[in-house]
Length: 226
Ligand SMILES: O=C(CO)[C@H](O)[C@H](O)COP(=O)(O)O
Ligand SMILES: [Fe+2]
Image (cartoon, rainbow, N blue to C red):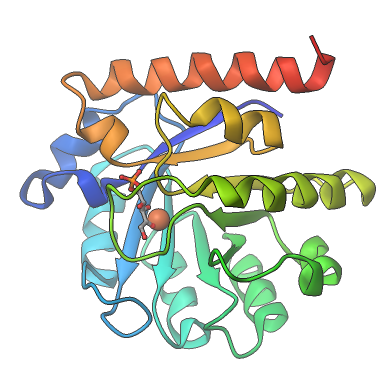
């Protein structure tokens, strides 16, 4: 599968979201961090802003829900115009039912794991999902340092995906930058969220192109061993 670079608007100017979405044209998806100050100690945005942003950009939206009770809220983000919803397994009461509901509404179903949450208990759920997100920082804030100790989990998850022959995207989020993206790609990730590394750059679209080139080279390296 082709590499995907998804800028996180958490690091964008919230007063100029439509312009900030345009500034990264060429990106595959926009990553929208929804935080409720309960699941994580930070508060960002909700359904009405997603609804407006979806109308203002052609780039599809993936909403990363760092909220309690995603079973109640996730379907509303698809109705608001998001093309994908990522819920945290630590917060979901019924992850399989929720994934099926998201898909039934026409969205892509994605499940996230916090750093301390292992992948192994969820092996049997993987066919229910379109994407799995391995957090490479503790969720809640942009601009944190990448957690290298997550690399073995990325490798094990890639092995499970390949073992079952699944068409499942493997995303990493948190501290992804020019200095860390190659390690993530070599471990098996193929979808990369980057907030500060894109919106903190002088030219965000050029930052997306640079990250893509690095990730593609590292994915080729993983595939060919050369
Ligand atoms: O989910 C998130 C934080 O909880 C953000 O998507 C993530 O932190 C992106 O920011 P950066 O690339 O600056 O780490
Ligand atoms: Fe995120």
